[in-house]
Amino acid sequence: MKFNFKFKNSKTLSLLNRRKKYLFLSIFFVTLAEILSYPVPKLERRVMDHAGILSEATVNQIESNLKQFEAETSNQIAVYTTPSLQGETIEDVSIEIFDEWKLGQKSKNNGVLLIIAPNERKMRIAVGRGLEGALTDIQAKHIIRNELKPSFQSGDMDGGVTAGVNAIMATIRGEYAPSEDDVDTTGNNSEEEVFSSGIVGGIFTLISLIVPSIGGMIFTIIGLLVLFPLLTFIFGSTFGLMIAVLLFILVMFLKRKLGIGNGGGSDGGYFGGGGWSSGGDSWSSGSDSWSGGGGDSAGGGSSGDW
Image (cartoon, rainbow, N blue to C red; front, side, top):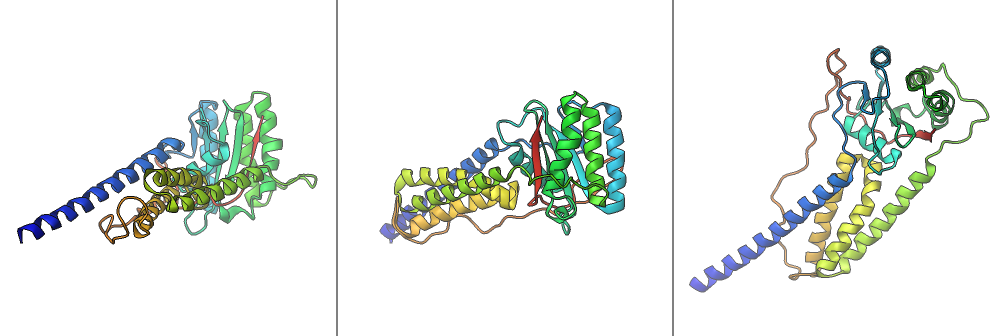
């Protein structure tokens, strides 16, 4: 009996050590992904001029117009100026911000984000899926080219943002149309790059299943990091991160089941019961506070520079 007791304790300690190791690696992976992602600010109002390019009068006027537009149509439009893209593309940053802020109603996905990065001289109109028919990629490109860019090039940031926001609202109302000679939107190459890198990341992750020990773990982490932009593009930044972590846990579990790495294919739980949960989405359009309504991007848009 004494021998059996020690043996069981040894197995229990071994299992606990494995759980601690995978828990540590999961926390490390989550932390690394968060560090690599753009630091999305808290949504506090419809116009977030963090780059300081707009006058207070312009901000207040645009805020008033957007508030009235939202009351009339339920469509949510936000304007954000950033002092830096932190080395990321404006397309990736717009998706992270859009999905973190949850612009648009959850049942309609009728949000729009106008993001401007003056230091990189980049801008983008990101459109929720529910407004793709009302504000197409071509129309977004037309607004950037004809309303925003000329004013920005002349140094009139107030006039450019005001004209751009007014054109977005008019387009959604059906009062603004692009020229017939407009071509398809820019940004398709970036989407193709996201999908291509996602495929490479998926291949690396699959290969990691047959690579033993620490090498396999490194392959898994590299694969999921390369796959992460695609997961973010499809599911949004928050759920994309959750899925990446779950994939990491799944790969580690499969490696144990297949007997690859330390220990051989014995069953054993990894983490206690529990699950991911997403708090209820709020919808507020009061005078003192404002928040997204639960929508996500997953739509189109257009990017440009000046």
